[in-house]
Length: 71
Image (cartoon, rainbow, N blue to C red):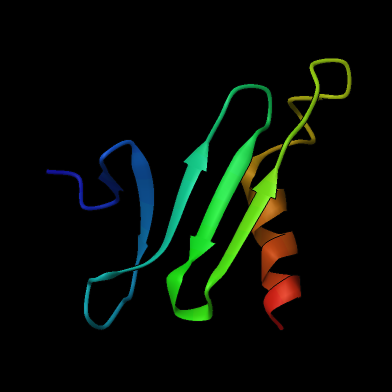
C-alpha cells in the first residue's frame, strides 16, 4: 500500500505521526492544487497549453512558491 497516495490525491505525511499534513493533485499541462488543512489554505495554479513548458512547470516549483507564501 502506498501511504503517499489516497483517493487520487498525493499526500505529504508528518514525519512524526505519519498522518497527512498536505494534500496535492497534479493535473494536465501543469495544473496543480495544494491543500494545507491546518492553515486553511488552498493553492491552485492553472495554465494554458500555450504557456506550459514541461521542463520549467513542475510540482516542485509550485510547492516551493507555496512554501514562500506560508512563511
